[in-house]
Length: 325
Ligand code: PBG
Image (tube, rainbow, N blue to C red; front, side, top):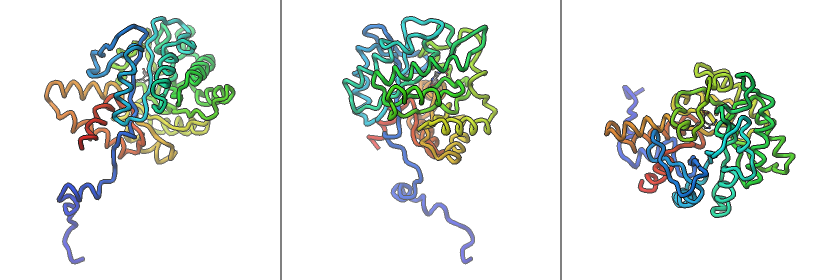
């Protein structure tokens, strides 16, 4: 060896060389933008704990989707805020439910926008749990029938992808069968395969008005301490026919993103959740961080960890920044 040490800095000496050896990229195509829709009229209401994120009424939704499309973001995911809730979440699977109407409207106005439907009951149940409740328990198998009905009604409304987030066992199996029987064999399932019971969902529950009225979600969402269980969750969803897997939250779980990617090789989505967004926004509003630099670093680290796609409230900002770079 005629040199005493390796000079790693040779490949960092100019912006152009750094670009040439960059291993990971981030582009607008990687992004999925979440949108909250309400049944009110003429409303664009900012979510207090999520500055820059709004609840949109249907008559204000198209302006927003138009902007998303212009920015080159290929997909949105819709969350509904119904005006009425009941014990079995019937507005989740009503043909005229808020999400079904939003899907129809968006697909009509923007046929090329990929519309993903979040399939869960918690925004629609008066108790705020993701399934049916009996004597304080969230019932698994009884909930599957309603979740399947929800997915089929979303597909009937024109959803391009079904994203079940409820964490009942067997939801991919049940929903795949339901979609196939209804003739939707080509509608992919983007499964929230690995979803932890997380404090990082707090602001979302404000935005979607979906906090559980009693108890928590720890009997169905995963324990933050578990890694091997995440792989079991991922494998079972792949076996049941999932087309994409989601790991959620993202930032504290990048080890899980990497392992799920390595183990399954499936198209993988990291969900950069509401609490992750709120932390960055709060620090940025105080002038404590460089928001753009921090968001770009966060998202590239999710790609580096193995995510193919990132579901993020920062998507519009990021797409804008990428245009300028
Ligand atoms: C519905 C759902 C939740 C999120 C996405 N889908 C809330 C929850 O499980 O309590 C959270 C998203 C976020 O925090 O950004 N089950």
